[in-house]
Image (cartoon, each protein chain N blue to C red):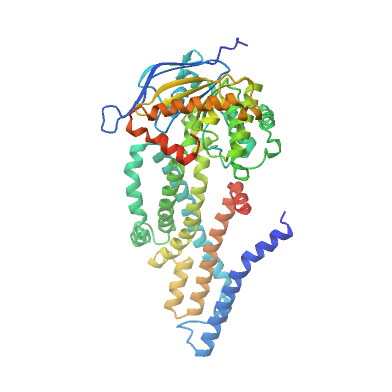
Length: 263
Length: 280
């Protein structure tokens, strides 16, 4: 249960950014009205708000489609990243070969592969988007979890050896718990990346049912306010993914949250 | 139950050479003979590079000797490690931050497949022994350095090994905490009858704790002298007794002998003396 004092600090943490956001939106609204800016250049927040509620059913449908693509890719990419890291941390030769390649691929704009994937599957298939998300998610998870599995305290390794423990003991009692913070660091990055990849991948054709394709079609119909309403939904989706991964981190590593609270 | 076999270390002509026949070859230990009898507390002291930690790691079978004969409890060091005949404590407490204090102590018991109830019982018993009963459910970072080190000792002793191997366990602690920990270690060892091999670079610490102080010299690492310390039962007065200072002088002179031995690299002793004040 949250004490009053903790509620107070929580408010103190959340309050200032909310005020900043409110001020920025207010300035935006005032600027658009004062300068009489055309909606196709920059719609006012009030117009975007109206459009959002005018199309809320469609926005919700599109958000579910893009959100599902992002989630499926995130889950598969994370699982593949963790499994790959387990294999790579076990076999030194494989790690030495795979790490530089993975680090190089990680710097590549993987989203650029979306048009090619679209050609490989039928035009209504969600698979190309999910594939892009999976690949985008894989690399940060893979690289971080390898670090977590291999960068273990030398004292801990000697200690485990003194306990006559075998590789499976060392993995379960030392390497996996040591890798947890690394996994969640990468998951927080990957969760945002997954939504970005899922939405942007739709800009390159394929099925016309997600947030990205709604944004491009609204823009091409000069319905700028509506396009921005979809962008707002995409922001909310990205934020939701990030917050859920934060909650998962707290649940998986209660000691970390406790530690941060203590210091 | 078998009759308990005496916990003994017996090293005969043990050598350890790192990177043999290479440009960066290091003669960490040459021809070391050492016997530790059951119930003894033996300190290894010397300047950095004298191989004291190497010798401890050989006994623990964390590394293998290049040559020589090393037995622990009458069996090979490797077998003794596999049988978990010893517990170990390091300069870093080395607690797992994702485990509570009690669950850190339970770790070696988990690996031995003890039941949960037995582990709980033993952990709280060990916490009483190191006087940290009320901290069972704290996490390591909530404890001071001295308290963490006490948890590490409790963990090392949790499965009641007959020997404790300690590598500068109090090296990172302040002087007051350090003296308190030394007294605690002696109390725990006399209560449990544990044999201890203790690596340190502090002369007063070695003299206060030990039945015997093994003085080592660097490059190549070897034993230059063994000083017997028949001071009897230790208490706070021991630290101010004339015999205590006499033994400190004896160890110090043995260490000085290394310095005068003509090895230009034994300037380490000088550096240690001015840096740590331990070689007063």
